Length: 184
Image 1 (cartoon, rainbow, N blue to C red):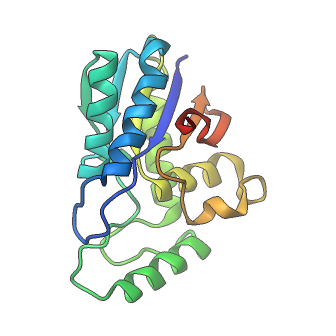
Image 2: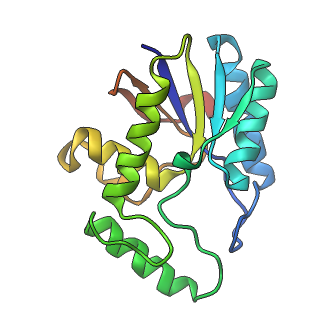
């Protein structure tokens, strides 16, 4: 069984649709890549969304491993700008409170958590550790699925800090949303 590092993408531009990383987000990705370079990564996976792909490309390049896109790493729902941000955020909050609620154009929290769990089950048999650039909401959804709400720090219900790493081994959560590698 392999160790999987779930990497929250770096800080993103505050734009609708499929925004990329800010300068700070690229720096977070670079610090993450430097920290991961000596872990012996076997592969890097990424959500198809640009902010995660940019993060994953930096990590894969530093570790000199292949990058694979996997749609199961995408966020629960993505704001596309076709409706007011306030409406999107209200639906996000509703889907966070009610794990079975399906927001417009997205997945329920429960379904998103199971989707990411299925990804983990597929990659845990791979040799060596892997990194997966994903999103804060779906990572929190996974943690709620694996640990239950009572064991998840309340602050993470709304997502994971940019650049944070959650470490999982054989569906056992080893570390949640660590940002220690981003210091200095």
